Image (cartoon, rainbow, N blue to C red):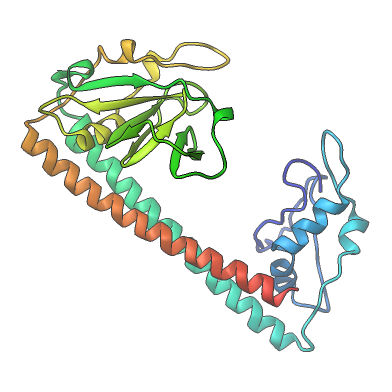
Length: 287
């Protein structure tokens, strides 16, 4: 009922025979006349969230009252059977979405397992500075727009767009400061990037995509500096060694891991379609 997630309802839980307890910041909804799962799905949509945003108090800790919740109007089908049919449909969708998330997690775990086994567990033999070159950007977030011909990458992915691109080609982008310091991204094409990232490209004789997967398993922790805002510098971690087999083997490993990454992209697209389908049905059924 209060806090940053005010108005967001949790999944329905089965009450044990010994009962259950709720903290004061949570409101429990029960119904003897209507199907409670139907009510759950009815308030698990953007319409209810907009209602909450309109009635919640504007304070340091936003909250809504029990009467605010009771005043929200829900349209019920004429029969309990219809309510059950609707909730069954959404339950099946929720189960399918949960399964899709697990599929993605399994593929991501598989990639990390292969990186650990095939790359990270091998004896390091190459200095990072001998296989990668580092470049910086002076572009700031306030210099990018909401639309344009070319994407601009930031710490969370695409942060905006510009009319001109600073880079054309494959690169590894490394977050060099902030809470996500050390996170790596592989990008291609024409783009720009803001100053909180470093751009790495491979030197002759090395496969950039292989080095990207290698850095996913590399620990940047020993090279972090700063307390409030952690930083990493290429001049520091470039002195560390990583495992680099011959170029043909690098390319082969990169191709296999890239295939799995492409599979994850397909599964994420399917997940997005399922979520859009659920949101559409929620908006049409609970208007």
